[in-house]
Image (cartoon, rainbow, N blue to C red; front, side, top):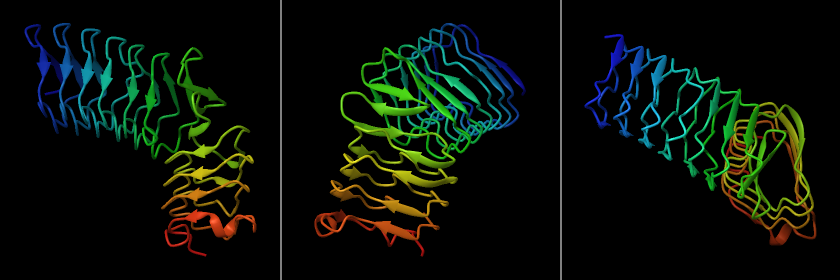
Length: 267
């Protein structure tokens, strides 16, 4: 089986219906289909294209996870819900435009998409999970619609509008300066930025959340601002080159440092 055209009578693609069909290369879904279920096409490593009609409103958990040859670029605007890990480990995805009706970019949605370079998020997105793009080493830009009320993007980096939080950065090479006004570095914000060598915090940063700088293997020196109060567990997990950590003396005794050193900062 290589090409598959689903008949018009079908309304839903069920749980794991075509999972691990590695010989499948092309799928055409009819306009009658409204739902693609959990794991529906997961592990279809030969699948290069799937035609998703505008009638589809939801894509299930891990619906296309592990489809390493899949190279779609646009998810149709009718899709309002995409569940966690729906496109995880899709190694051939390079650019993705998400549907206008999407409200939430869920956990792990594009995690492990090693070739993904750009992503565009629509106006209506109200929630972006911090690990939605985890382990995407080629990602250089995430663009958020300028009219979005919850998030903004600057130079490909995502920020929260309603609270001054740093949400996610794509790949960073060399040094990076976090803009003024940011008070929190959210989970997974810099995770996997293997070429990041230094980071400069603005004076207002108070919290650095778990896994914020995990696996930044080239990061050597971190100097925290004076108002920092919390450095969460695993914040610098796997930072194998980190040799210098500076916390202002006046604040050092009151900073809540949770497992900062004992989590992969090996020197």
